[in-house]
Image 1 (tube, rainbow, N blue to C red):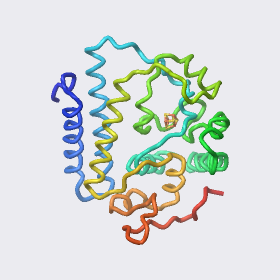
Image 2: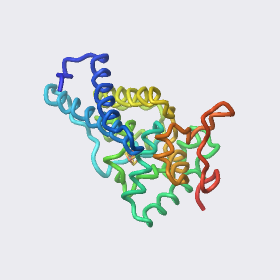
Image 3: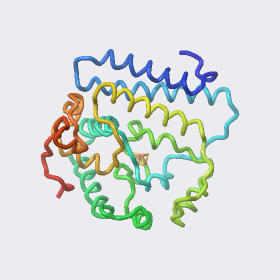
Length: 249
Ligand code: SF4
C-alpha cells in the first residue's frame, strides 16, 4: 500500500478510487458483486486510519460498546449502503429478528413522519436507531459510513448534549475518521454514479423500510434500477414494492 500518511486529499481520494475500481473489476457478472466495492473501500479507510494512529499521538476516543447517545440521531446513508445492510439483515438475522426490526422501523416512522427536526430531537429517546439493541449496534461491522465518522473525545459532553437536546453542542471529536470515512463515502458515491447506479442521501429508517419490502433489492439495484427515489416519467423505472408504501403492520 502506498504510504497514505504522507498523502494529501487528492492522493487519498485516488487511492480509494483505485481500491473501488479493483473491487469493481472482480465483481463483473453478479449483482452481489457490487458489495466488494463498499467493503474494500471501508477496509482501506480503516487501514489508513490504523496507519495514521500508529504515527500520530492522537488522543483516544471515549466511544465504547454500551454508549449510544449518538445512535439516537437521524442517520443518513447512500443507496449502496442501504442495499448492503439490507442484504446483511436478510442473510444473518433470524426471522424473529427481522420481524423485530420491522416493528422498530414501523414504530420509528410512526413517531417521526412529518415531524420537524426540532420535534424529532424532542422525542429522540423514543426513537433510537432501528439497529440499536440494548445500547449496542446490531450491525456494527456493517454500520454506515456516517456512524464511523463520529468518534467523541468526551463522553460526558455527548451525554449533556443528549439530555439537553442541544443540536448545536460543540463536542470534541477525532477529525481523522471524520475526514477519511466522509471521503471514502464520496468516492463510493462517485463510483456508483459512474456505474449508472442510484446515488443520493437517504434516511436509514425509510431506506430500510423500502428495501425490506423488495424481494431482491440488491439485484434490482445492481441492474441500475432506481429503487429508492421516484425518478419521474423520464427515469429508469422504479422497483415495485411488495408491501405498499407504508411501514409494516
Ligand atoms: S447503525 Fe449502529 S452505530 Fe449507526 S446509529 Fe445505528 S446503532 Fe448506532
